Image 1 (tube, rainbow over the protein chains, first blue to last red):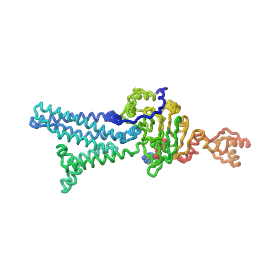
Image 2 (tube, chains in turn orange, yellow; image 1 turned 120 degrees about the vertical axis):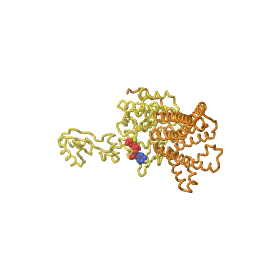
Image 3 (spheres, rainbow over the protein chains, first blue to last red; image 1 turned 90 degrees about the vertical axis):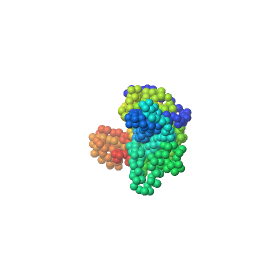
Image 4 (cartoon, helix red, strand yellow; image 1 turned 120 degrees about the horizontal axis):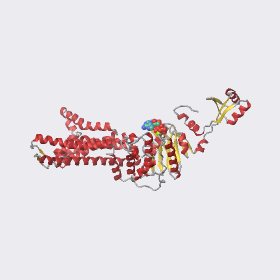
Length: 270
Length: 300
Ligand SMILES: Nc1ncnc2c1ncn2[C@@H]1O[C@H](COP(=O)(O)OP(=O)(O)OP(=O)(O)O)[C@@H](O)[C@H]1O
Ligand SMILES: [Mg+2]
């Protein structure tokens, strides 16, 4: 390598101004797609949503003979299954890759107010959730139109389900984010999330079936059950339902997020 | 200016940094020198807020690192060149830092050129970089914000001889223009050549600090290395005068001025084939001071 003769400009002594939050958001957003791995994860997310919708449309068209009525929620629900699996992984990687790749050393040296960086990451995770959800809904509308065009019966209702869908997707993504902040390890965070999403409901279901009083306990921690009423419109929820929802969210999202933020702000970065 | 006051960091029962106090002045290159595991990196991590101290504090231009509004524009930091996302290109790494600091992307090109990373190398992913290329990228990253203070942990690590010389010049001129430079190393020769000021650390404690002359004045040990055609005779003659002598390699290590050894040789008609002062300069001092903290045990 030849060695440049040029030297940097003389060191300044004027006080620079702070880093605005919008800039941190921009940087974190860029980090969310600027590596091969993160780019293809996002690409796969979109591709799988389209593929799932397509398959659902074909199944409906073949099986339903036009008898099955689809509404806005039908196709959104199909996309939802994909989002539930993949969006939290996107959120998890936003946090854990700083630790596994050790880039946190540079990130936090440039912005030592770590909570601002984490908040920016949270913002980016929300942006991607909303982008995916909107994408899924647009796909839903398109497939609704397509299904109607091939002679299926379509209604344009199901708005409450859509609102519930958006809220639940955001919450699930945040749960992935929160556990990632707590364990700071990619595989561990993914395992915890999938355990939460697949194993916990099964275990609670078995408990409910076998033990009489278990149900009155499990409804406070059964996330899928507690979020169920959201799909009928949160404006229709009873006080009891709100109570179960709030407690479940505090347990699965609030506690790990709080502990995780505390851990990150105190951790030694090396 | 960097100020470190009474800095202590404890890991469990182990004190990695023990009541360390020093100052790095503007316009000077300060070398932070110590054997492996002495606590150099730990001290530097504390300086930039990556490791919380157990006791004591560090300030940059009088304020806590956490209170610098846009620290990258004031302090250039290189702690570990391998701490980069392997999947990003070199240019992308610098672009992210430049964005965070609010710098134009032209600054990225300037820095790539400064550290001699070619455009095609800048497009490669960091995981495919050689050690020296990563180091150059790290140096570019530290210089990006045009900071007045540089904190570099073993910056010469992995650089080729031309690269080391280039870096030496770069840091010297940086300090000459009023910048503050702190760099660590476990290699004395590397630091000796550029540092105006040296801080010796061993097992977390500061052993000595000051410029070259001040450090050498620490070395009160008078020693001579001599080889003669009759080492046994010389040894016996010196011992008779009450001067301690120990065999060292082909010759003798004598606790006395060379002139005294020469005189004794003449008196006893012994032919000297080699006679020199054994204080060994800074290296001897370094080894002496860190003798009990060296992994290789007693060296002197
Ligand atoms: N998290 C930790 N837990 C326990 N001990 C630690 C921890 N971090 C550092 N240490 C210890 O602190 C000591 C100082 O380490 P440090 O990395 O600062 O040394 P160094 O002077 O940079 O050495 P080198 O020249 O090899 O880079 C070492 O003995 C190390 O093992
Ligand atoms: Mg070190």
